Figure (tube, rainbow, N blue to C red):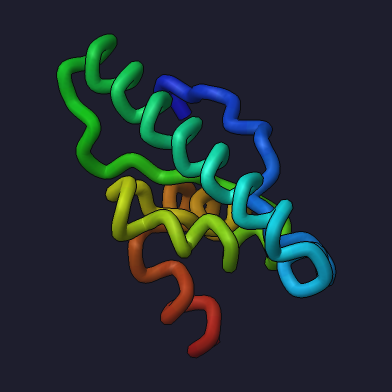
Length: 101
């Protein structure tokens, strides 16, 4: 879609029962993911001079929930890939139009 995209492939620490069964390890995984997101934000800001409206996309419900936890500290929103594609292809009101048809 013409946007600069950085890979963010480090685990968010939310998969399955990981965060419940091994919170000691999951906390470290989450911390490292947060650091990666902050580093990527700085990199994008240096390249483009702008880091507004950054979004991380995923197809995994657990990751979407986990990544949403970083929104306050990083300023990076999270959403599903398919939702972003629908928004870009069909407009901001795509969901209302889809559910009302």
